[in-house]
Length: 315
Image 1 (tube, rainbow, N blue to C red):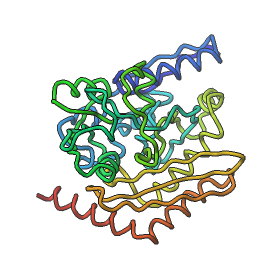
Image 2 (image 1 turned 180 degrees about the horizontal axis):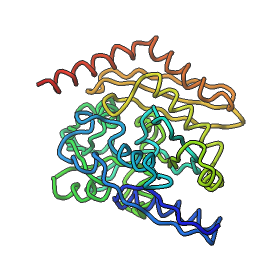
Image 3 (image 1 turned 90 degrees about the vertical axis):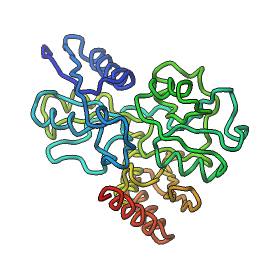
């Protein structure tokens, strides 16, 4: 094949690592292929002084790239799966989901203290409502300080903003070669990951006769099955960055198991459950788990949070 393929990506170090990984994987499969990166600035990259929940949440890091894909300025896009909204724009689809990296969150602390060792009143940097609510549930004596920016920016702010620790995704830390900075990998009993965390999303135009077969070689079927189960859970709960929602699925012995939660912002209420079933029914099991959480009262938490955000927007 003698063609130039353009990959749309954000410009952060992590986004470029991810896009270059896809570029290399495509070049390995098709040595004659020319692959170029097209860096696109998203709304999420431009607004750095406001928490994501207050500027729209999910979609902030993908919309402009999706527009470029729809307008044929790029041929495919590489995103972090956890940034993907539940709804994919008409005309686009998830072309491939490569094998997932570690989905956990990590604690990186200034003095090497693990979560249980941090003193009362310690400042924890994160702008993720999901992370903040779960930390406060485990350690209500800690103080959350909003923290925006790319992964490397947030690590720098650990020093410059007098924070005691920050919480980041293990996958991003590993991809940037910063594993030596990790103080603690947070167990999912304390910190359930974001939907899709650690997985990449290769987004393409639907029925693209050139790109669809190209990216198909990067597909990891088990990762797709797990991620689609998690996304079905998220979709049913109408979740985004505005609501502390988490889910993590896995497949063992052809059985799909998913744990999901919805929490209040202050972490005082956490509604959590786990469900298992056949691996080929992951999306249905994700939906069923969402229904379980709704029956346990999660919908009231979600509605109340949305009302609060609407009031703050109006104000």
